[in-house]
Structure formats: structure tokens, C-alpha cells
Length: 120
Picture 1 (spheres, rainbow, N blue to C red):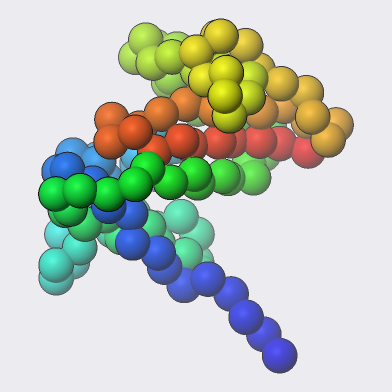
Picture 2 (picture 1 turned 180 degrees about the horizontal axis):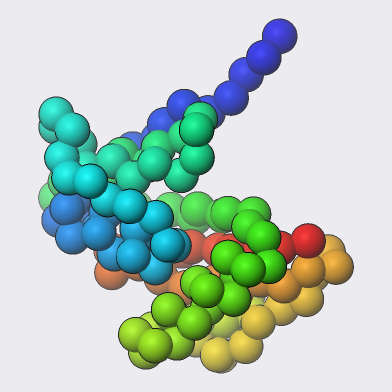
């Protein structure tokens, strides 16, 4: 049996701003609204569909990426002055981690979601 995640809804205060931020930082494209949602295509199988919500609990989204993507994302985070950190509870120590033989870091979206990127 094959199972894969097709999409997930990401709650936000401003779905288009959230989609734009995520796409810009991750080096992806945001091509505008598609119906009710502001989707960002992650790869051939997955989109994050941003949606407005008045209240929501922040979530954790983790992305396994290559070394070149890691360097580019970290560079954009640093260029925009966004705090990042080496762990889920240390998201502002401006350090990266070296877990599992790779590199990783955490940062918060403007809506407070905890985003993680990792290599290895």
C-alpha cells in the first residue's frame, strides 16, 4: 500500500502574507490564491495550504533538505534578521545543531509556527 501526504492546512492570521513569507524563506514559489487557500507547493506530492483563522494553536513543521538548500535558507533567515536556534526550545540562540550527522535549525513564522530545517 502507498500512502503519502498530499496537503495540509496551515492556519494563519493572513494566509497570503504567511504563504509569501514561507515561500520566500524556503526558496519556493507562491503563485497566489487557488480557490479558498493560499497554497505553496513543497514538491510534486505536497502543498501547504495556508488559511485564515482567528484563533489557532501553533504547530511544528519540519523539512528535510539538501546542503545547498540549507545554506540558502539560513542565508535568507540571517539577511532578514529572523531569530533562529539550535533546538525547539532554543529558537533564538542564533546557533545551528549537528544532529544525525547533518545540520539543522529552528525558527518561528510570523504566526508563531515552529519551523525546522535539517540535513543529513
